[in-house]
Amino acid sequence: MRLLILSDIHGNLEALEACLAAAPAYDLVVNLGDVVGYGASPNEVVERSRELGKFFVRGNHDKAATGLIDVHDFNPMAGAAALWTRDELSPENLEWLQALPQGPAYLEELPDAQFVHGSPLDEDEYVITVRDAVQPMLDSNVPLTFFGHTHVQGTFLLTHMAADAYHPVYQTVGQPETAEFPLKKEARYMINPGSVGQPRDGDWRAAFAWFDVEDRVVTFCRIPYDLKTAQDRIMAANLPLRLATRLAAGR
Ligand code: ZN
Image 1 (cartoon, helix red, strand yellow):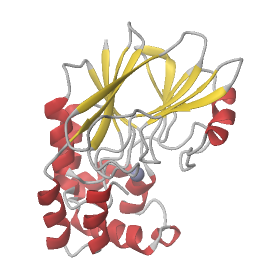
Image 2 (cartoon, helix red, strand yellow):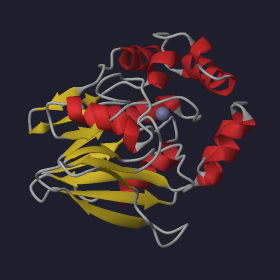
Image 3 (cartoon, protein in one colour):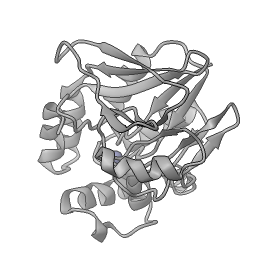
């Protein structure tokens, strides 16, 4: 069985389509939240995501865009984008987003894994460093956690010896690339596929991953996409200009 793992699409339709076109055949899509927010195609991305599968956890931007949390907790740029998204969403898509479940969520097909937006301990927590990851890995009753929220692709791992981090190293800045990461049976992991629609690890390419369940291999992927169209849409929507420019920097 192969899981396609998507997170933090953030209303970026061009990035989502590029990932789907590059993905190998898969059995199931898991979506780790922040379907909308920042990008200018929230309805299109919601509809495409709904076509892909049924397994979702909600992100903080999904909550803000649908009024489940106050945008005053957001920085001004994120708040402006959340309010724009709320106005833009069709009533049906807004209702669907509002009903997304809180993580952790579990898949019957993969009983040793959990799926969250931020951390298994707090759906809104940012797990950025190894230090942040240790407690959630220790406290989880399953060895595998797939998470998003930080927009940084990579893995934290914990063995009886040490805690460590792995971030894929790629050869180019503009070509499609993959990096395989085989999992060891005895370790615990927190695995982040990266952000489809707004990477923040210095690489502008759309990020996602897949997991070959029987082989226990995670494959990280970076895919160039039609950046200019995504930026033009943000500018045409009168969203903050920085939301367009940051996409080119991957920051
Ligand atoms: Zn996000």
